[in-house]
Length: 350
Ligand SMILES: [Zn+2]
Image (cartoon, rainbow, N blue to C red; front, side):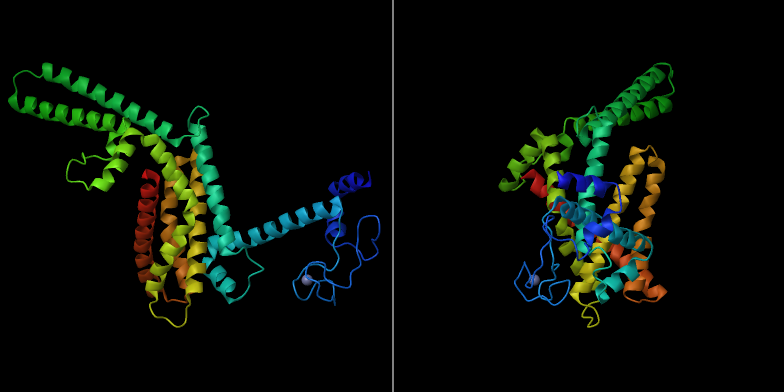
């Protein structure tokens, strides 16, 4: 079982250099081949790599080589990841510039990073959901518990006010004030109970004013609010890529008809920026899970700061110019997020 020995040997170390870059003499038993033409595309070989397709000239057919590929893949991704991440956090403009200018192999591509963070974000959010309920991966349940507690507190307040009213005597002003407060609290309890039963998704009855085509969706959301919210979540992860094409036109509007910047540049900018924002959501989620939700709120102030830095450096703007464009970009970001939310809710309610 030479191959298993090879794995054991590989795991114990020193394997990287040999597995990833085998020395020329390793032939025969381990499947080493000596080719004159590329095994992938057939082009004549002139060096250690095919000049037509880039594949290595010699490939192996051993488990050791398989492990080597795996380790090399992980290390390659990891190396790029740790080169890209600090820069994305602290020098996002420089990262954007250098990637656009051609340093493509050095950094993780914007779209790869984006897909990776979408995946990580939903994993963390669902993990939090699992944490807050009894093993049921449903974020809604913890919200329900919160509403129930709120209702109980409001009901207590109503009882206290009623008792106060009884002992208030004949002061007309005082009685009127207490009556008003009781009515307010009761209305709050009512609203919370409606929220709990799912009726509040649509606060007003569609009645006869609503167009006919929308009524089935409203009925559906009323009858089954939890299923709808789950479908909205699903839609949000499935169509997360939509955020990129939704945002690019906004960024183009910041530099309309500029000949200096191409759509490609804006797309790289937007995709790196969105990836960073999702990493913030992941960080906030982890902080909440660790019980530091108080500090998680501070992360809310990071996005404008990050946008400013990225804009300033990537588009080489002066300070005032960068501040003005950051204000516009923050506004646009809210618009894009709103459009995305509306789209996913619409898809979820269908
Ligand atoms: Zn080739």
